[in-house]
Every structure is written in structure tokens, then in C-alpha cells.
Image 1: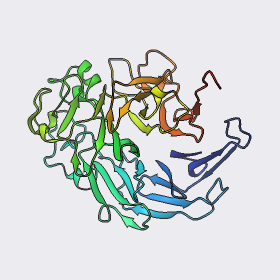
Image 2: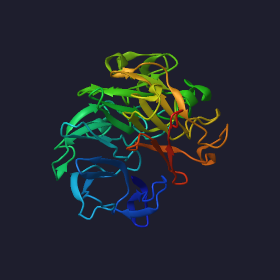
Image 3: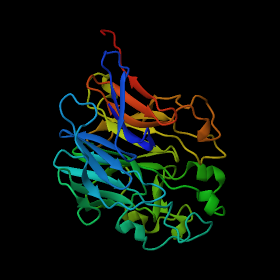
Image 4: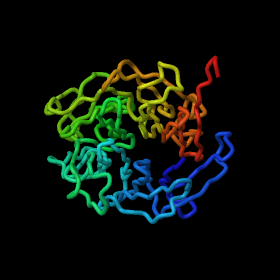
Length: 363
């Protein structure tokens, strides 16, 4: 098992874990890579690693835990930015690599995170960021943005990015914008701001535009509405009818950090074929209690959700009510499926990885 480290540990950005005794506990732990990051995928014999400014890969030879070869640069040229710099990655099995390039802002304000500041129109960040870019999976020394294709735009930031083989489609779960009440108290109460906007699940097709920073999705009204930075009042639709809708919406500020489509057969039927989402947990839902800190499951029928989500694994926070994220005992952030069909969930508070296994009547 491999895990990306968003902060360097022992001078490295990736940790390699191996269980050599069959007890599902890592007894070999080794570190490598010269940069931190958050995107990590195994593909065609390589370990691909999304750092904050590039995508690298390492050749994995049979039996190796730590790759012995030097890193190869697949894509470089991503701008350094103070926020939303995660380069989550995924592959479509047809020779393409998809990379999230987050927007370095909340809502593309003229004066960033400033009360009452209008939004830039058009938003210049959309040219090279705030979207998903597609590159060649096996080509080296590609440079963003000139060597890539802007596959989709109008996406604030996506840590949860995954190609769903069963639907032959790309999916992303967006981190919604913050602080509606803080910047526009005349339009939003604290309670409204704590619940808005929705965290959106996108079915992403080439050429899609999901509307950031001009619009957000209100899960209570079941409608995409105009951002206050662009003249919205919480009800006005305006230009937002021209943008793509989410296929599923969750309450605001849960912070989706990974999505995974379960293709195993180990779990019961009602937990197969759908989407698991790891919710890292909020920081800005005051005065309401913080939310998230769980793993949910959404059933799918083909390319779209087939019903409401359910909580698959909860209680990571360690308390029923949290005033802030610093009180959470654990915060789910990554997902993986083992070869035996178990689900693995990582935490970035204490650096723990859990294995969730199903034990049925015949096991």
C-alpha cells in the first residue's frame, strides 16, 4: 500500500507499507519521494504521484516496495498557490491522465476574501485553473497548460476525482465555496451560510462547465443560483441555467476528499457498484455543529446515483458535537480497495489507515 503525504515526513512525500505476515498490519514502512503531494495512483506498472506543482511517476518492478528507479516527470508547469494546490489524479484506461487544477481562491473576488468585494468577470483563473485537465498517461515532459486539454471547467477544487470503469465516465466531488454570511451578511444568516452551498457530485464529460465562480448549488432549493459576488441574492438563477447540474448533492462544508467506485464482490450486494466518499469534515459551519468526518455510500445504476446516500462508516470524530475540526479525533481523507475486497480508509489527523472487511455467515 502507498500513501501520499501532504506534508513531508522523514524528508519524503510518499510512505510505502507492506504486510508480510498476513495479519493486515503493516510491518514494513518505508519513505521515499523528494516532494509532498496528495495525488497517488498505480497505473500500468508505475506509481504516479501528484505533487503540488507536477505529476511524477516511478517504475515499480516485481517485488519492490520502494521503487528503485528515478522519478520521471509526466506533467510540470502547475503554478504554485497557497490554497487548493492538490493535484488529484485518475486514469480512464484509454491512455489518458486526468488532473485536478484547483482555483487559488474562494470565489474569484477582486479583493480576495474581503467583505462585499465583487467577483472578477470574467474570472481569469478559469484559463489555467479551476478545472480538470487531460494529458497523455504515458508521455513524459508534458507542460501545463499547453500540452493538455481542458476537459472540464467551472470547478472550484476537487480532491475526490475518479474514473468509473463501469460507467466509462469521470466523476468528481467538489469542495464548495466558503463564508457566505461573513462576506454578505445582509443576504445570508449564519445558519444559511453553515449549510450552503452544497458539496456537489459531478458526472464529468468533456466540455462541461459547472459554473464556478458565478454560481453555486443550493441543495435545499434543488437549484443552481447566482453567487452574491456576481449579483445574486440567494434566489436569483440568472446565467446559472446554462451550467451543468450535479448528479447528487450533499449538505455544505462536509469536505469531500476522495471518491471510489467499489468493483469488488466481498461486500453485500447493497454495497457494491456505487460510490464511497470520504468526508474530511468542515471548519466553517458555526454556529451549527461541524459535520462530515464519515464515509458515505451512494448506490449507482449505470452512470447516475440510484438513491439517497447512507452513512457507511461514521464516528471518526470521536464526539457527537464538534465546535471545530481541531476537536476531531480522526478525519477521513483517502480510500482504496484491497485485492480481497476490503475497503481501506486513511486519516490525516493521527496518520492511521483502517481496513473495513465484511464477515458474512459463511466466513
